[in-house]
Length: 203
Image 1: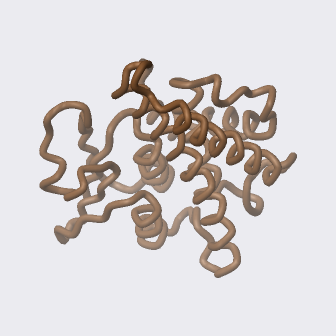
Image 2 (image 1 turned 90 degrees about the vertical axis):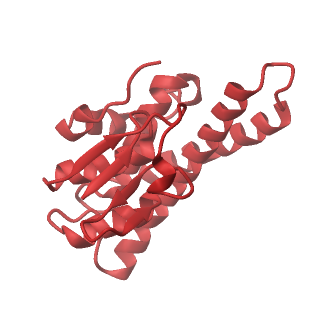
């Protein structure tokens, strides 16, 4: 089993953390998405993460890969087996992923357009999604140690991985004093060995 990832991708980091926490044997191939690469031979849309299974099939999209990994290697379980618990964890993950999508599209706009050509209306729209997403997650978490139930789930992993990227690259998007509950969760998660081993590079 081989996971295609990039060092900075928080979506790929979700899967890397899961595999490490579950102690699943796997290979990781890092891809520089900003240089010519052959990722499209594996994933036609050229995105990470992509997981190539031993039978040759390739899974794309972090929620799909997470679902496979958690079902195939259920110890420990990060997505509850029961419908209500599963939906709740997926609800948190979807909100965290959607917030991160808005961060990513904002960075692309700033990377590929000089200041004169940037759409401020587009950036403002994405920033409103980021702010609203983080505020909703902050309220949902409250003072609980975990997002769902009494143990770490994919919801906690997703939030920690995305906040790790935001804190490193665009810290003004995540003012920790404004989101103390999320900051507490993120710091607690970053202390885990799986998060340390997958920390995104600076710059």
